[in-house]
Image (cartoon, rainbow, N blue to C red):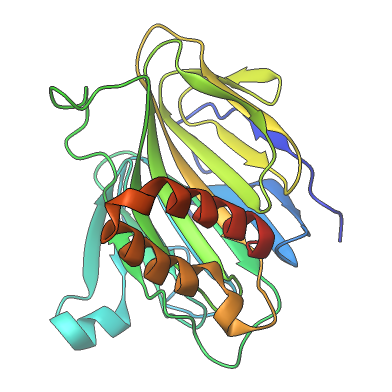
Amino acid sequence: MAHLRSQLHRLALPLVPGTGDGWEPFHLFRGSTRCVGDLGCHISALDPSVTPHPPHEHTEEEILIVMSGEVDLVLPEQEAITGNLRQRLVAGDLAYYPDGYPHSIEATGHEPANYLMFKWRGDSTDRRGPLRFGTYSPISPPGDPPPGEAQAFSTRRVFEGPTRYLSLLHCHLTTLEPGGGYEAHADPYDVAMVLLEGEIEVIGATVGPKGVVFCATGEPHGMLNCGDSIARYLVFEFHGRTRLPWLRPYYWERGLRTWVKKHPLIRRAGKRTIRMTRDLFGR
């Protein structure tokens, strides 16, 4: 399997299925990385009232992001817990599926739905990770941030936790004012970004709304909002596994952050320690 390098994909949405069954996936990339043995990304087009398959489960973990239109997730396990088989997602919403979690999807409304999928697997434990199935609405409500919240560069965590294949799966929403950004740096984990609004410059190219960026472990990337409006994008961090569970960043970082909050005088040193240990063990 090919080794993935940093790359950028511009998407012209909405996409319309070209097949007779009303569903068509469009491949973006797939390969191995230093953190994940098999990582792929595709975007699917789904006609209204069409489902691509009955509820099924597989060994891969997945993230689904609705790019346009509306969908219903079909979730047999949720029906057993809440009594609701379906859960509605709209453009900008996302879901995380752990491995072995039964699911399907159906487009609703009058237009085809487009949804992006990240799928991966690698070295694993014998059981599911602590991070369970969840759905999220990072931008709610859409539009400009509330008064007092706007700044050149800001982030808001959406979810994070260990999974069967990753020491940490992390997602946050970044908001960039025009001209905002950061200098080039290299991360000790794989990063995927999905642009929801605005225009950014990254890895030597510009990308507009609905673009997808992949930054491989150890390859430098910076960021700049080169447009005239606010840019918002989802960031997904895929942290590789460590052999000893107690070295996983999720576990020591939770305790360290709690301790730092209780001791304001050493907050700065604590934050520096978190960054150093994340760089050391987050590979």
